[in-house]
Structures are given as structure tokens and as C-alpha cells.
Length: 368
Image (cartoon, rainbow, N blue to C red):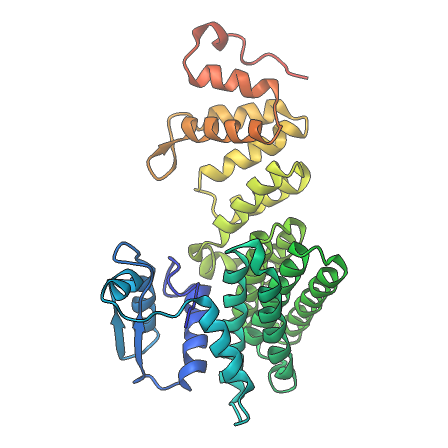
């Protein structure tokens, strides 16, 4: 069974770890002695290794990593099951007349929704099959609402399922159904907000809800719903900023918001790009690369002097990994131009970064 997020990088306290723990506990009925085997595409894929470590940290005692993965399995002439087979099997299990425990039904339906999303990404010809899988998963998840209506992790999975279904409808150009599914996701987010208010004195509960909002925001971002993503990220931060900084920033929350800021610049929504940049920087003040998004937004909002100050401030510093700030900014400028975005300041900054002494004395002139 595919669990797409299980091998994501991060920490033992991040939202990925919590989601995986919940999923595994639901699938195994909390039996920590269950045999778990993790694998991915091949020996060079480390996601299954990460997933194995995460499962072990979650308390599971019989965890195995099949390093060769699918490639070695097929080379050995053994049968493999593709995503279509997984979708069929999950639908069959959910349709069995025998009673399925609510948490197992929840785990199976969430996995079906994730499988539908994978199918959607394979080919345009699979859209209707993906919609069928997503609708099936959504119906199964909604059946559980009476018994799980205050379970934050369940509500997060239900919201993610709604977003995936909406995206599938949108790709099929079924706009009314897409709008209805997105509305369902918004209703669930409001339910999460009400739960946060109801149990606002519980720090642990707030952390869980902020994590759910981050999941929802990330899902919106993956489907190019930038405004909704920003609202969800603000909701996560607004629950308890100190809590978010401590528990979520290390899990990539700040990076997700930073990525959103860049996508908003490319989408020419510069006001929200600046808003997202400020939020990302507040979450991770030492992340130099996030400053670039802020500079880009300011430049296109008509504040070139402020943008210039940022572009020049970080010269010589490492932006991401071993990449120099100057190289990062120049790569961004190239991508901006591909999206039809240009500004005289970009040329001046590039000449300065390239060491043009003829321009150095003019770089501080005002650009209108």
C-alpha cells in the first residue's frame, strides 16, 4: 500500500511523523509487533529508508527496509501491483460486507484518495478513473463523520480528500463540481477553527490543529490554489506562533510558505507574495533565500529602492546549501523572465553581480 508522504524528510516531531503514526496505528489497530516492509522505486531511492526510520521511531518493532525496491523485485521476475491494482483492492476492501473498524476504514479511504491523486498525475486519460477513486474515498470518509467529527487528524484527511477531488474535477473541466468540493474543504477548515477555539487552553491540541492547517495549505499549494494556501498557513501560525515556531518550522512549514511566496510572484500576485514572504521570514529569520522572494515582490510593487537594498545586502552569502545568493537571484530573474516578468532593476542587479565596474557608481540611481 502506497503511503506517499511516509518518506518525507524532516524531524521526529514534525507533522509527517504524526501523520504516519496515525496511519500506521489505524492500519494495524495499534499492534506495534506488526511486520512492516518499506520499499520504493529502487536502490537509489531513500524515501523508504526514511519511512523505515520513522516507523521505528513511532514504536514499531518489526520494521524492514527492502532496499532494492520495485526495480529489484521486477528483476527477480516477481509479480508487482501498480497503482491501478491498489485502487481496485482498496475499493474491494471498503466494499466488503463484513464490518470494518472505523479507524481502519479511515486509513483505507485516505490511502485510496492518495492513490487517486497519483493516478491523476500519470496521464490525462486517467482523469475519470481518478475522479471515481476520489469520490469513492470521499464517500467512505464522510460515512465516518458521526464517530470522528472531533478527530483533527481525520478532519485533515477529509479536507485533503476534498481538495484532491476538486482538483480532479477542475482538470476534467467540471467547474461546478470543483467549486463544490473546494467549498467542502473550506467548511472543514472552519470546523477545525471552531475546535481550536473550543479547546484553546490545550497546547497539544493546538499543535495538532496547526499541523492540520499546514497539511491543508500544502495540498492547496500543490494544486495551485495560492490564496487558499496562504489562508491555511496564516491559520496555522495564528493558533500559537510560539508553538508553530518550535514544532512546525523544523518540519518545513517555513519552507512551504517561502515556496508559496515564490509561486505568488510568478502568478503576478505581488501583494500576497509580499505577505507570504513576511510570514516565511518571521518563521525562519535566518533563511537567506526567503529574502529573495520579498525583494522580488517589492520590486514589482513599485518599491525598487527597498528591493535593491535586499538584493545587495546578501552578496557573498550562501542562499541555499552551497549556492551563492548572487547565483540564486540570477536564476530567479531568468525564471521571472520566462513568465513575462521584467524590471530595469533586474538588469542593474545582474550587472552588479557580474562585477561591471561601469555600473557600480550608477546602481543607486532611482528607478521609476
